[in-house]
Amino acid sequence: MSGNITFTMIKPDAVRNNFIGPILKMINENGFRIKALKMTHFTKERAEAFYGVHAGKFFFDGLVEFMSSGPIVAAILEKENAIEDYRILIGNTNPEKADEGTIRKLYAESFTANAVHGADSDENAIREGSFFFAEMEQF
Ligand code: IDP
Ligand code: MG
Image (cartoon, rainbow, N blue to C red; front, side, top):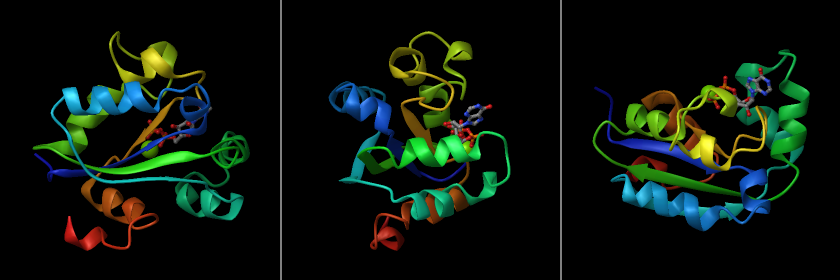
């Protein structure tokens, strides 16, 4: 059982496709409280730093290009067992493999343009949230 905070982003494809509203609605309806919310834009440099763990992988350059291609929405979410429960709600990284009813199944465009990000550990939720929210330590 992990902590009660996770970090998410609505990625540029979902923002372009007008899915901010439906995705936030799903987040709320699945028991998450939105603790902080910001619409913003990654520079290429900040996207490279955010996804630094993937540097050198075949998809890295395309991922950085995509993530800096338009606005994103960053948010801190609260729920018991937040990390694990949110990863279930978003579905598999590859939307073709995502279960029915998951955010990625419903709203993703492709493997890279897969609608949303979800932190994979308490530690990464803090690290990633700190990219966007100075008050991260309060959550
Ligand atoms: P996650 O977002 O489900 O945690 P990660 O493995 O952390 O998946 O990868 C980060 C992001 O990089 C993915 O959400 C996706 O946008 C992109 N990505 C990962 N693997 C691939 C791939 O094999 N092809 C294309 N894009 C990928
Ligand atoms: Mg990941």
